[in-house]
Length: 538
Ligand SMILES: [Zn+2]
Image 1 (spheres, rainbow, N blue to C red):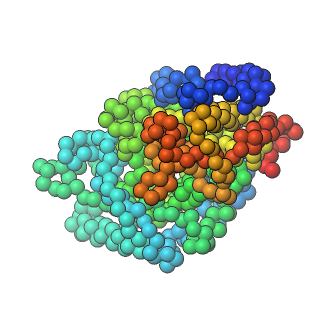
Image 2 (cartoon, rainbow, N blue to C red):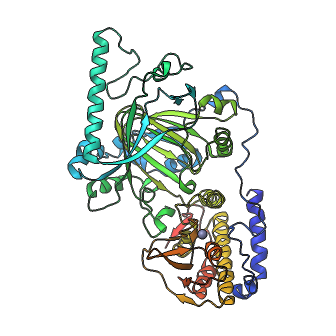
Image 3 (cartoon, protein in one colour):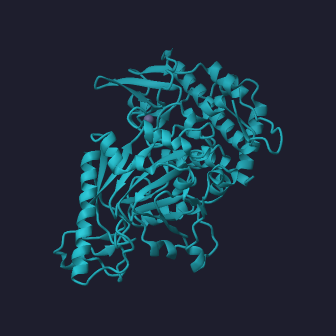
């Protein structure tokens, strides 16, 4: 147990001892309205990116081999060792998964997608065609971190047409080149773009004398495959995956959110031409992600272990780009100079990439291909802790936490039995902090003479976010009509608009007694035997 967690657990146990009746304990503190929304503690310093590991890495350590497994049968895919392998590395590639499970990847081919739902919406990113792994600014002729991409929309049928014509055009160019004896000897096969240039420190041709316009490409992204009626055969096929990689499973935290989080607990599709880039990022709230390449071309991945995210964040800031809000493609030399290791590998058709919690990664298409992806949250202390840490960091950075961690924590405490003490204490601490905040908010509201109306919660009702600051609003909602719409506010934003809360309606989703009961009933579940499942699902 690390020191921080140990301290947390000790403080927590001390607090529990002090609490005879939780509601009574919190009484009197809320009147002033100084209510900390920290999930760590009232006095905790604001979260900050971690210092990277101090160990100086040599050349080989800066280019670590990518953890990979080759699957040759179905049994292997379902072995607990495969999940253990994934959980133990920052990123892993599972090769030959589709073949081992007899997954029909053809269901996600452009041809089948067009036949199924031609008019389905596709978000388009128009990007500059960049050479190999580099990112050049066409204006300055320098390697840069900033990525330029413009957003628009199209349909599957129209993107399919673009994808096909881009492929035909490239074939024609290759034919013309070979006819003139200038064929690129590095191009391996027709589905992948001839990508290597020989001089990597010279700006590509789009910069010479500024006369050439950079060549642009279109990346079809975030295609929503959540609709079970529209995408039934596709979604059914994915049920063949082992539980830890499935979109929905009892051992996946995101299946306990109780509502859809598009692209996280539902499937998204990406349609690519060579050079299509997903800029650097960590997943929302540091959840894990699953990505399968449908093919026919390859994708190239770059990844940095979670422990170095603070160092990457610092480099973004040096390049005047915001780590969370900005769009960036790391200059590899800058990473190596800063002692940051980078995994680099190809994902071929049928390969599954597992991105572990907090791993920083960026991806480019080498060939013409489609990918499918979603997030998962293994029920581990590490996943939960990293999710909460990012939740806190997001608040400080005014970045929306797509995973409503408060709502999720309360659902977890109702739905699962936890026998890992570290995970248990982390969840219980979050419950205690929210219980305390709710109690203080209610006290403040009553002190101001505002009536609290019980509202309850609809089944599968989405979590609430503040319409002003996008923070998750749990249990006590401040509602005000704005442009004929009822807008949810957090207490802080409500008070900024109206210090005495005039003009706001205060709604309560759960009775405090109900939450207290859930809190009391959430206890550490004893491990029955060494071989028993860690998490017993009710
Ligand atoms: Zn707010």
